[in-house]
Length: 491
Image (cartoon, rainbow, N blue to C red; front, side):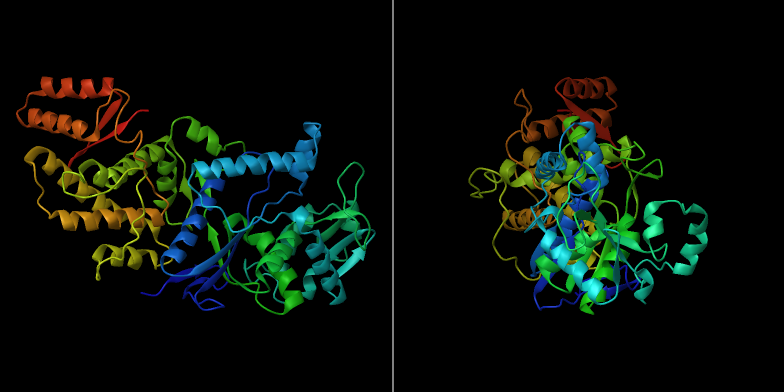
């Protein structure tokens, strides 16, 4: 089973081959730290977190770098409004970022470079571009000469002649920046200092870097000239990633990245979720409303990572119900393991370290799905199958005192579920997961549901409604479907 992935650069799905055998160099364009992260950021961070986890699962050593953009007009504007500094604003929202990602179970990157900490590398790269004839100074600014790079547009498919036709009526010829450029398509590598703004000394005078050059420099400083995967949101393809390629490859003569990967946007009523449109929900607001972080992960992973995903209350409710099913399976061993003769110990559910018997059809099907361009929805199908089978066996054990499947096979299924769920970052805790505040256990809830089912079969609908109301009063909501009854806790 060979991993293949869709490469934005070539516009096709390709077998994954690394620069160095067994090792992956991966860079993700992170957030601009001027506000709290919203669900669009959560999707990107979850997707690339799971890509990294999966690469490690199949045996790669992954070096994963994620930057923070901490020089930006938006940060400066916020600092001005708050009578603060750019550094203080950036530090505050970087701290908030780590708090939000920890709640979502995002593993930390190996390193988080910041633009303000990469100034030497940024200036060195600009200087090399200038020496090679790809950049020119202009009254304290430095611009990249786009037409000098013959492959400009190869990532996005944009052609300069097409862009020129659409741009001509939007150009403000009186703009001082426009007047400094030799060509309207040229973009800033270095910006001369403005009064009251932070600035760094440079060969071109005091100023600060442009956005695009920051990532080129951070990739090069941390990972070298050519990396395996450069990841980010689809909204970064043009101009940001296009400009990164132009900057980096003009200097090195080598590919910046062999695989360019982009996640789709989170939409609200078909519009991209963004701060500028005011239609965003922050991660902390969503979680503070009581939505389980694992349900948020599941919401993200149920969609193919390159496609848009629409955020609705109904979608989050469906993800919550789905997470409850998987959670039941993850807790199976701690609910029933003692009855089945297992020795499990205590604490959070461990990721089993034992090797799986070969072949393991569940693991094989999981990898077969995910190896197809990180098809996480297909991988989730395997998890749901395992979780539902464990739930069925748990119900049989509660009502009949034994299971249809041997304890040894159930142990293997449970270990497989826990391991594969861990690859997707889906983890359940024992505490607070198996009891409500009044001590009602999952097994007791299942017994009540079984009693209700028997009442429905006997057409004793008054008794069926009584059991539903009793559970509802204790914070348990039932969801009936044609094949089964699901439930979730309301707190």
